[in-house]
Image (tube, rainbow, N blue to C red):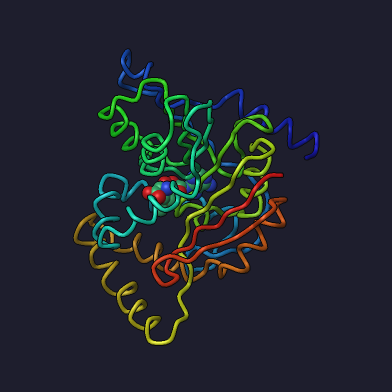
Length: 290
Ligand SMILES: C[S@@+](CC[C@H](N)C(=O)[O-])C[C@H]1O[C@@H](n2cnc3c(N)ncnc32)[C@H](O)[C@@H]1O
């Protein structure tokens, strides 16, 4: 960790906007939103789905996708996975095993509408606090409304920030999760090194993410479903088929599980493992800060 990085993170921390805190929610229903997208002069090429774009352009395009689909995001998840995403998220939280009887501070990055955070709070003891961090105010807004209905005073907050520049000091959290988020982040190694930085020694990193499927026959069926039906469902339900085309394409561009596991190790994590679910459609990646 360089001094420069520490200064950067400190300055982001100073200006972090907590979008929702259940205690504060009782007093006010509206929240100041401020963009936390990182600025960069790096113009290297990357991909946005199958399209090649400049690194500095990718986040803006990703943000458009999630602003567009936020209101119907949860319904679409159920439709396009036939409810399976619920089981995958349950498996993620079962693997996390949040503490029952001691304080446990958790960060759910790219947490969107709060699905993983709510599961963690259900599984954990009442000394657990979860921060849902996401770069997209529309997704967080849906999550904040859901949290309000669940009455979770003091146990959850929503923060608008980037996975690439977490607004927290080193060694803040006991656990870090990111579900279906990492493939949308432009600089994945940077997000992984931020995850490592903010975890306490002994803290756990878990990532739930799709993987390209290459099992013969199954891959053809999966491709047919993904490239034809998912964008069609997306158009019918959210009015935006193109966003769902991006989400499908981005799965094909994401590294295979072994390659992604190596990236997790390169960020400093130890005892790195991954476990395939549903025939390898998704994987849970695990690493420890030791
Ligand atoms: C597919 S959604 C996943 C939401 C939630 N984790 C779930 O599993 O339902 C991906 C999320 O990643 C967020 N995201 C994209 N780029 C990000 C970044 N650089 N930092 C933090 N969140 C980001 C998006 O705004 C979106 O909410």
